Length: 93
Image (cartoon, rainbow, N blue to C red; front, side):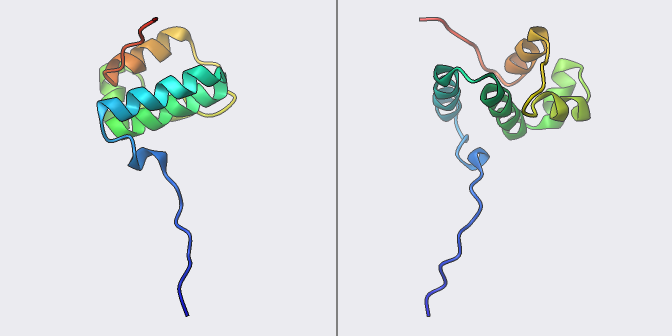
């Protein structure tokens, strides 16, 4: 009998390059859902290392985890700090 178990999908397994992160973030931004954007930024921060992001932004790790949960309303300044710490630049075309 064949074992057909499903594994949990984790998007962070696929955010392994600058290009993958850029494409993912572009798609999320194109959808225009604020909650989805916050969750996506949380995934990107996890990939980059939450401790490292905390150091670079001056924000606490726990605060960062809470910031990127669905339904939160972080300051734009916080989002920009995290994007910068992750090496992500937004570009309008």
